[in-house]
Length: 218
Length: 233
Image (cartoon, rainbow over all chains, first blue to last red):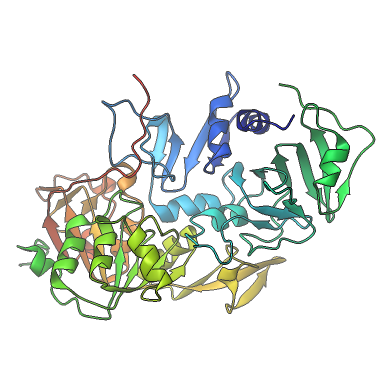
């Protein structure tokens, strides 16, 4: 079975380490915050200028001046800091954020990522995504392995305009955990019950499959 | 006005001198920390052909979105737009031009503009449509784009507290682009919720020193919430 959104978030959460500063994108990446292991301290960075993002506020705590990068009302955890947008992107572009998790339309064997623009459709903008992929060393892309029509999103060459060039090394899809190295996707883990053949069939870019591909457990 | 007193008596006075075709840098992120009343004054004045530099363009009927109603905006320089139907319509009609700019690059363009730095190199956007036509240079084996900074004819800023000298503090994440915008206007206009006595703000806690501020006014704000998300208590 393909992973659910919650399982994808759970799998990404296993990459967290104690003391990590983490930026989570919109969608599945946001759910990762629900699976921070017990006893582990992780600080969430929101690029509008908040380090130490907390849960959503109660009605009583609701404050128009406290939002996250998704423009949702949020709270700050004890020990949080708030700063301006230039400082926020100095953290991101300066490589100070330990882990970035974001969604994408396509990735390719050279670590290119396309996540913001589909020609012919209305383009709303890249927001902070180009800064995040250019600035972070440790990035996990979360996305479905193939489109609804069965077309692979793991390609030899991205077909859509790029968000960043040569910056992606780890991809979690609903079918597999893959790492990108030396111009190929390396299959590291597969979703429970998903065959290597299915993954290979839905991966358009070069795929390296080791003798044993462990199944994820939840 | 005398000495360092930046307070003006009306919104009309606050935006005096704004002319057709000018560039206006606006603080704010989404609808958070936006200079609501200064935007309202630009609408009232009916100034046209404006280039607006702001991370977003408000929503239909609120924030910078109101300037679209009478087609006052020629060009937006933003990282994320299109939360409003009118924006989409004018963009598709070719009545509005958009220069999409990565958020960190946008913040840095303002910061650098205010600091007298005409351009800077960044890795953001290399190999993407943002990099097309821009100079690329290699430093330590990595490619970087040359991005030019931005200075506005006006900067419009929303603060929380200020004193008459124009020393400003921002509240929570309503800070966002406001401090950079404040440095990057030839004329910087700040509107705040509260005016306090000179000397009342702790000097080390001031976000925007008064040297950047030309005009200051106290307003009342709706502070509309774009995405209201709550947890059950």
